[in-house]
Length: 598
Ligand SMILES: [Zn+2]
Image 1 (cartoon, rainbow, N blue to C red):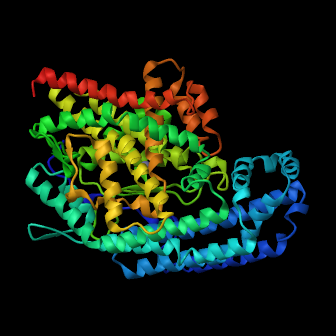
Image 2 (cartoon, rainbow, N blue to C red; image 1 turned 180 degrees about the vertical axis):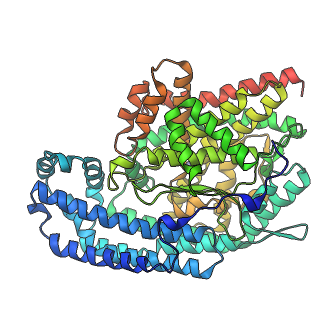
Image 3 (cartoon, protein in one colour; image 1 turned 45 degrees about the vertical axis):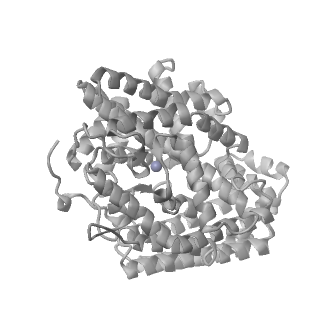
C-alpha cells in the first residue's frame, strides 16, 4: 500500500473508438445514414411484414439491427462525452441534440414491432423454422411479450415523440439540477460526490456536518424535486393505465422477464431478514462506534479502530486482476483487455458525474468504464464491480444486438460476483483478527446497502406510486414514507430523524429508472446463493459453468440459467440461501468481536 496516488497520472478513457470528437464529420454521415435508412426501411416494409417469407423477414431484421447499432454508437458517444464534463455547455448541448435526432429518426420504424405483434403465433413459428430467423428468437419473444400492452400505432408514435418533453425532460431536469447542487462544510464548497465522501471521514463531527448538510440542501430543493417526482410517477401511471399493466412495478418485471410474485417473494423475504441482518449488524456497529444509537449518516462510517487502507491505482488493478485470475484464467484474459486499452476513465474531476458505471453501445464494441477512483478499499471493490460488468458484456458479443437487451437483474450478476471474489481474495490474505473484522464489517456494510437497503427503497417507491394514484404526494408525505421505511429496515440502533428526512431525493434511480432498485437486491441475493454453491463445491467445473451462464443471461430464462447450479428463483429458500451468506458473516463478526473484546 502506498501513501499517495497521483491524480494526474490516473488513466482517462479515449472515445476515439467512436469518433474523433464531437466535430467529426463522420457523425453527420452516420446521422444521415440512420435517418435515410429508417425511412427506406419503412418504405420497404411498412404494411407488409405479415406477408414476408422467412428469408425476407430475416433480411428486414438484419437491416433494423444494423441501423440500431448505428444509433447506439451515436447516442453512447454523445453520452460518454458528456458525463466527464457536465459543466461544458457544448457537450451537454451535443448530447441533447443527438438524443432528440435519434428519437425523431427512429420514429418511422415503430410499425415493425407493432406489425410483428399483430401476427398469429403460427406465423412466428413458421418463420422460426428458418435457422437464420431462429437466431433472433430471444428478441422475438421479448418483443411479443409486450404485445397485449401495445397501443395503436398512432398513439405509440405520439408517446414516442412526446417522451423528449415528458419523462425524459423530467429526468433531465433532475440530473442537471442535482449535478449543480452545492454543499458547504466549514465554509468550503463541495459537490454531491465530494460531500458523500465526507460521510466516510474518520472524524464524527465532520460526518455529522456533512450528513446534516446533505439533508439541508435536499430539504431546500425538496419543492422542485417533489414536483419532479410526482410528475415522473404520474407520467408513468398514465402510460401504465392506458397499456393495462396490473401494477406500477409490472412493466419493469415484464422487461426483466421476472414474475411479479417472484419479486414480491424476494422483497418479503428480505423484509423478514431486516432484523437478523441489518438490525443485528447496526447494533454491533453502534457498540464499535461507542454510542447507543448511530446517526443515520454514520451507517457507512469507518470504524475507529480500523486502519485507513489506501491503494494506488496500480495496486488496485493487480488485486482485482489476481482475484479474477484465481477464479478463472479465462475471465482474467477478458478482464486484462480493459487495462491494455484506454477504456477506463479513472480520476474524479470537477464537473464529472459522480459514482461509477460500465457503458456499452453495441454487442460487438467493447464497453467503457467510468470511475471516480480515490484509492479507498471501496474503490478497489468498485473497480472489481464495474470490471465484472465489462467482462459480462465481452462474454456476450456473439449474441447480436437485438437479442442482447439489457436485463437489469442479471446485468448486476457478474459485477457483484466480481466484487465477491475480490473481497474473498483480500480476506484470505489477512492473518490479524482485527484486520479481518474490519474488512468483513465493511463488506457486510456494503451487502446490507445492496441486498437490504435497496429493498427498503423498493418499498418506498412502491408506496409512493401506489399513493400517487389518489393525487400528488406532498413533500411532507414523501418524507414520512421515507422515514418509515428507513426505520423499519435500519432498526432501533440507528437514529432516523428529521436530519435524514429528505435523503430520498438523492436516490437517482427513483427518478430515472423507476423500480430499478430491487434489481440490485435480486442480483446480490442471486450471486450470494451462487457463491454459496461454489463454496459447497457440489457443482463440478463451477467457473466454466458460471461463465457459460453469463454468456446467456439476456437470452435465457432464470429457471434454465440457474438449473446447472441446482437453484430455483421461485423457491423462497433460494433468497434465504443468499441472505444466509450475509448473516453468516455477521456471526463471524460477533465471534471476532468477543475474541477481541472490543
Ligand atoms: Zn453495477
